[in-house]
Image 1 (cartoon, one colour):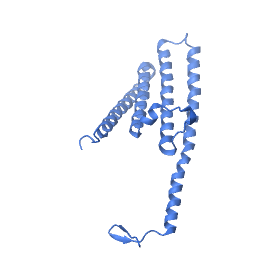
Image 2: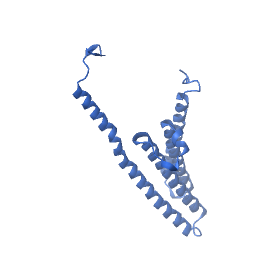
Image 3: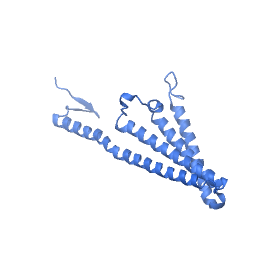
Image 4: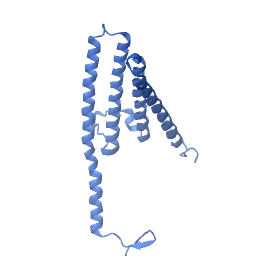
Length: 192
């Protein structure tokens, strides 16, 4: 029996074997290209290593100078270490979520190691985690500016406050939209 496809108001013949083969080749190339993303993931892992080195350097310098630093300087150094930690966590979330989302599922082998949030957090949750991390990082930056206000230009502190406020508003709006669009237990989306 001769099959015909109906599309856009016209009847067409089934695609030829060459067209089907070409389509499969293109789709295979597109899906295979996801492995190119590994270069970016490896670059982010190198960035994580650089952060570890700078974290260790900052921690060592603070430890060596602890008796000569003022209270404010110690607080600023600790805030800087917290900043490094939050940025490292942000990098880790990006690497794991993007690898799992676009390249391949992480194979944990026989050890069965699996982070709880990896299987429970979807794309929306990852966006909220990322934005939440950015809110925390900008908040710490703002606190650093406030503590060192005598050494900081006031416009610089104002820009830090504005950035922090915008991140908080964006995070709150994203969380609200995510909550409003999430299906309830009965499968209905609110306000449908």
